[in-house]
View 1: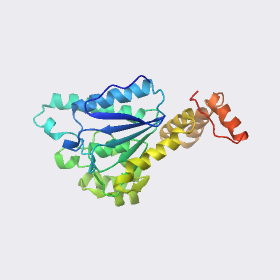
View 2 (view 1 turned 180 degrees about the vertical axis):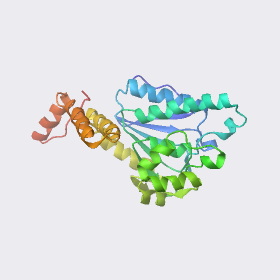
View 3 (view 1 turned 60 degrees about the vertical axis):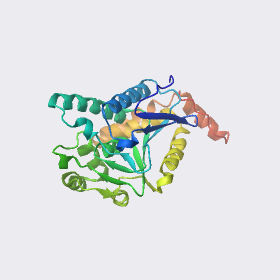
Length: 266
């Protein structure tokens, strides 16, 4: 991967050899997603899809201590015409879907509140570590719209249809403790430890065979949309792609030599 550009609304930083930390960087407005952030994040996700280079795992977080992402920037949207709104939303759609489709695993380190599109962004990641002081909500129905970046699909798949419908239809916030009880979170952390713990897990993932991790992500995601017997076959096809890789040979050799494997991603 060539060096990443300096973005206006997001920060990127390599942490160690293989982990990329991405920070939503509009803390003065709760890291709200505006048009520029849509362009910045779409560019980043496209670059990492096409040429990940050394990046084997990503941690996505927000600047500041209280808000991960407050959703769309409503000040920018105030007074937009329907064509303007739809053009912006189409950009956001491509940005979210490119995040969902990333071959590289992405951990959301939700360091503060995640509302509306902010919660949808976290849901678009592979899993979530969250501050125990964070709050969550999909508030769109209180604004005359509805979730349009995966919320009505990803939330029911994460916590079940009945609870998701209540959350989306009421627009009411819920706590990190409730989110954890619902099964939305992988880890509930002290506020100062969210990013650190997410980075530690990212480092573990990045230390495993990168092609294997990518095939796991693909198998879980697409297999979950198939009937079970077809999904079994899809899993085997994903598995078979790894047999001739150098990393598979290195993994077995390292095991027998009682040493840590040196995976190259090939």
